[in-house]
Amino acid sequence: MDFSGISVEKVNNLANDGKITKVLAEELIKKSAYWYEHPAGYPVNAPGHAKHIRSPEAYWSEILGESQSKWQSWRIDFGANVFEINRAVDRCQKQILDAIETAQEKDWLALEENLHIKVRQSVTNFDGHEYDLFPVNVENHMIFGSNSIYVTAFVRHLISESLDFSSIARLKCGKCGRTFLNRRQLNYHRRMMHRILL
Image (cartoon, rainbow, N blue to C red; front, side, top):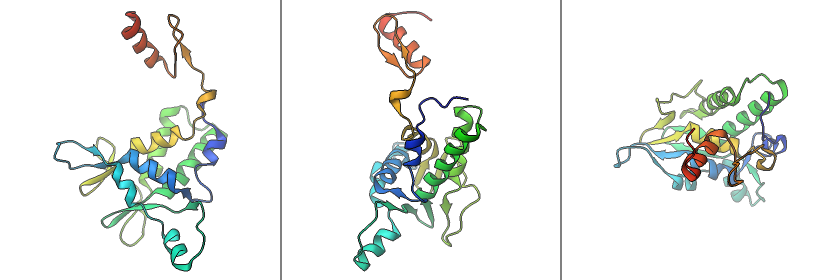
């Protein structure tokens, strides 16, 4: 099995003892938070939601006058439900490392599906209890009133943070020499730029 491009070092840097950096938490929410019920009539990305993430540890550090650690537990509230960003990342990190070590995943799609499950298990209710598996709609959004987390975007950004692009085998166009990450991109380029019918 070949998870070409995944860097174990980068995966290890995603979380530290179940905690993540504010930068990563913000980027994940910028990519995956949506206004699900939007006047446009379709879900619209809501990167501004990243301003609403919070860390109880950072809050108490300020009150107690302690210096804050780089690694915190970050979450975002959606009414009575809380999306525990750090738990989602920590669980996904362990799933990726386990997949690499045991070769239990057959392909990228299987790994991605398992990561989706880990994200959906990282939502707590008003009592602080986790849902077994928070529901998603057909588009793979976890819906919280008029807001949502697009699970696919969350997982794909996390995977992109795990990749070492310098080690990925690239496909080269025989006409112009440009390189591409996959055959679909290469074929599209050949059709559009060189008018090659495939």
